[in-house]
Length: 96
Image (cartoon, rainbow, N blue to C red; front, side):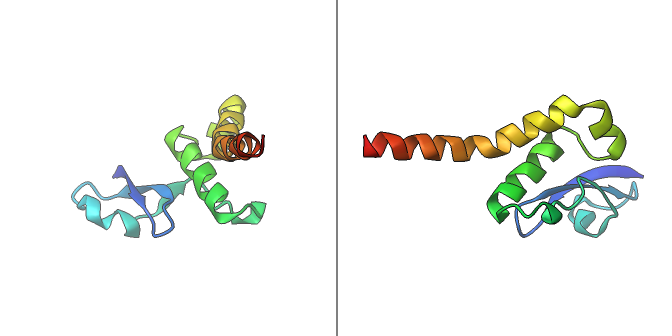
């Protein structure tokens, strides 16, 4: 077995397992390792997707990963909201 990444129709990156002989195009059918779905957080879709991808890019796929690397979880959250922060600052610049 090997690991592969695929991006779903919403733009979320998923780490999955595939048989060694399976092509990468089959990744969408492989069992997902993580990150877990975040829809229960009730975030707007764009922020949920950014957070999901930040967790993926930081290799935070399992409970063990997040428990041992809590600062990375916080950093992923900060990065997901960074775009929103810049958008807010831009609004202030336009109004001032």
